[in-house]
Length: 277
Image (cartoon, rainbow, N blue to C red; front, top):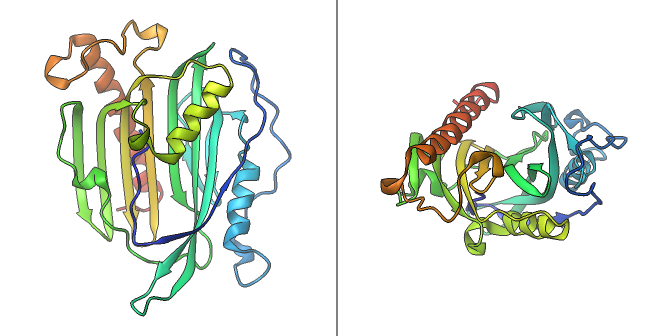
């Protein structure tokens, strides 16, 4: 799901927002609030700071907003999988580059957005996105190697792909099982998602089949984690089954293959559109 992210950058500020949402089972998309479109051309040397970019992104995607189509990361678009998606987590931070003399300087606005789909109180899918907003002075600092590019396949790994594993250009993906009860692994955004869903009387997933992707190029990055709930009523599967890859039945293999295909296709599309090649 949401793997912990380790970089050579320091976090200077972290923000969270919470807004009201329709009750579980509501089908109509909620009305979108009035928005102020982000515009990187205003520049950081004028009136807009890195914190302003984070604040504007959160105002653009308040928790509880239901929509479809695309997510906009300033002038770049992320095409969402089909259907209506509801925002459950919006996070942002200003990160700083650290120099050899020990000094630091704000270098980028990094945002995280988590969305979900549901069938009544049951979560069917969720999607975590993390990226750097294309601000005028975004640093070209490289990232340390992400765990997706380093880890060896485990007992619940269905497929993994490592196209490029250099620190200046990372292009990796993995399809695996996520145990949502493992609060250490799902990270802060995952814990926020679980808390939000529980507070809104949704049934929090136990296990999810997930395709996670990491794309980096110098100071730019995109993390994607798309997950299917193993307990979604329409699937006829259950989290009580054995999901270790050597023990999978045909229905489980199809579920893994579906998330791997959808996640890989999304990664390829974004790698080309956003220039991670």
